[in-house]
Image 1 (cartoon, helix red, strand yellow):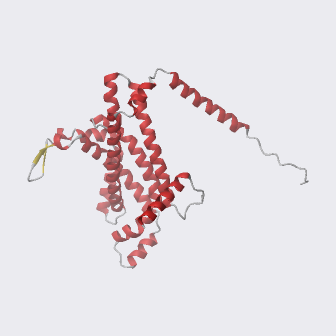
Image 2 (spheres, helix red, strand yellow):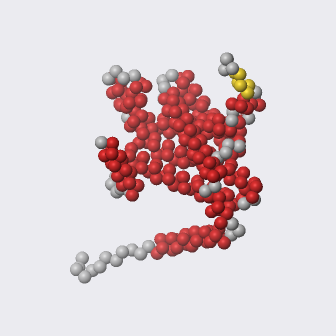
Image 3 (cartoon, helix red, strand yellow):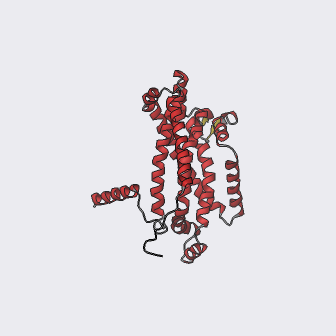
Amino acid sequence: MQANDRIIPLRHYGRWVSGAVLIAILGLIINAFVVGQIDWPVVGEFFFSPALIKGLGNTILITICSMVMGLVLGVIFAIMRLSKNPVTRWFSGLYIWLFRGAPVYLQLLIWFNLALIFPTISLGFAQYRMVDVMTPFVAALLGLGLNEGAYMTEIVRSGILSVDKGQIDAATSLGMTRLVAMRRIILPQAMRVIVPPVGNEFIGLLKTSSMASAIAFTELLHKAQLIYFVNAKVMELLMVATGWYLIVVTLLSFFQMGIERHFNRGHSFNSRRSLFDVFTANLFTKQHKAGA
């Protein structure tokens, strides 16, 4: 190559054209909502409404409780699924088949209307009416938690199977029982595979919790519906609910990325650090120094 020769980079005109088209489409969509018949001052008025903030709190509460329930059930049934006992394997498979097969909306309705089958519930020393026990919160927790547990079972099982079988053999050769080896050796290593889909499931569960409005659980969407039934500002209240869902999902996505990077240390080929990584690292460093 001669000294005066220049390397002319390829010009990707298609990228510029497609990017311009997508930006134009996005602009048209935004403009349509801005000039459309949406009373945006009403959106701002109700965005921090105490009723909607309370509904948002209930949404986060039922999501956390259902995810905790799903995680516990997922670990238990995943271990049962991998057991050498055919009865426990069959029972775990039946659980997965049943709760993954029925729609979440249907499960919520069944739990909420369980009093039609069992009017009372007896604990031996006391008897209670099912309508008093199966409150909207309990029905939502059972419907969402049991359904989430079925999906978490497969996630945890795939994480356990990703760990080399020789790890269990080595642990048992040291005198550990299978459960102790699972808790101290296998599950910590499987977390790298388990955490990403668990984060996605948590975000999905947050949005799925809006179905609990069908059984009168006062989460965010249900509160918005109660308000627009009175003032007829349907789209405005739905925009408020959409805004809060987007805010919470965005925050959860940032934390999910941080947790994934924590468990992927030593396995990631990307050495660049995001602003979130720098912030959390500085925060934990300050807390450590303060504690010292």
